[in-house]
Length: 377
Ligand SMILES: Cc1cc2nc3c(=O)[nH]c(=O)nc-3n(C[C@H](O)[C@H](O)[C@H](O)COP(=O)(O)OP(=O)(O)OC[C@H]3O[C@@H](n4cnc5c(N)ncnc54)[C@H](O)[C@@H]3O)c2cc1C
Image (cartoon, rainbow, N blue to C red; front, top):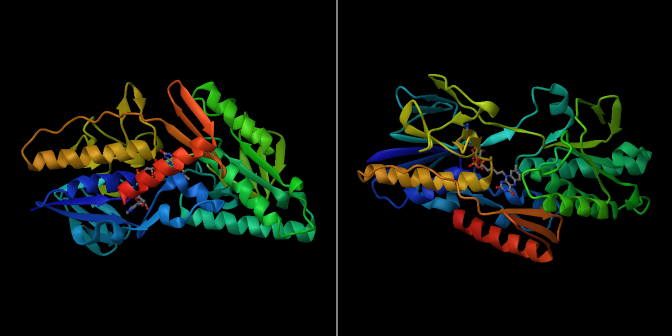
């Protein structure tokens, strides 16, 4: 029986396994450094308490039962010459390996940014942000220092945009507990170095977001390159913006695993793959999702759940083809549109020339993601 080892229980890893479990001739091991799957596109909705954890987080053991051997731990080292993975003191052999260990926050080697901001990648970050907001509001009520009522998100990509909207709603709710604070005194900032937000989408999408920001007193500071963060201050050129709560969403880098031989990594520490999502040097090693980089039409595929999902399926099917003596197929990404959430009631859907937003888009997104969560878990 051939043994497949998957590193990473994210979108790519789980979707690959969903295919692999169809075969009775494979032994599957999943290694993940936490014991649950996290549906990241809905993380912001846990911040403003608009949905239940049950449709965002699922224990891995409940997903595959005993069909998959689950090892909770961090894959520390891969010996590609002998097909072995090291996890703490344990060694696991593989015939096929899928590297799908995702990505983490990129603080661009700045100790200050890492120290004074909160990275936003997992559920732990949501809990940290809630705690920080509660403390800041309490400190404001005691000192009346304005910086405690200023909340900043750095990075106006989709993650940052969704986050500032949800964060504002959480702050507004918290302030209600303090009769001596006027919610109008709270300041919400979102900063980015580029001059246009979401340039990858039609203009209309940016306009919808900017309109939402204006209506909800969220200040968009485009063209503001953050150079440093000092305690409660964001430094950009000769400007210093005071904020006690600062969240960093301005970049990601792939999670890396030491190996022998060492893998040559691409931009953002990603593993560049062939069109069959394999590492060029090793025919039995695949890489997918945020940890990997595949070029299509001379551009890298975006690091999204949608890409990871489709790549995972392709890898799973290709391994099944191989064990059945069939030829593997190339991967081709198929974009199905983008869903965005702006607070509790406002969604946006955009696909080519079609863009719609509002309450209907929110419900559409809610149902679609519930369905996706059910499919993957
Ligand atoms: C807040 C937020 C919102 C997002 N919103 C969207 C969205 O709306 N739409 C969208 O398409 N994308 C969105 N994304 C991006 C999306 O989450 C990623 O592109 C997607 O999760 C990538 O899937 P993956 O399988 O590569 O990695 P992940 O889903 O990150 O899974 C990787 C897994 O590997 C584990 N791991 C890491 N290192 C090791 C190791 N050494 N050993 C063992 N396990 C390890 C991690 O703990 C994790 O469980 C969002 C991301 C964030 C953070």
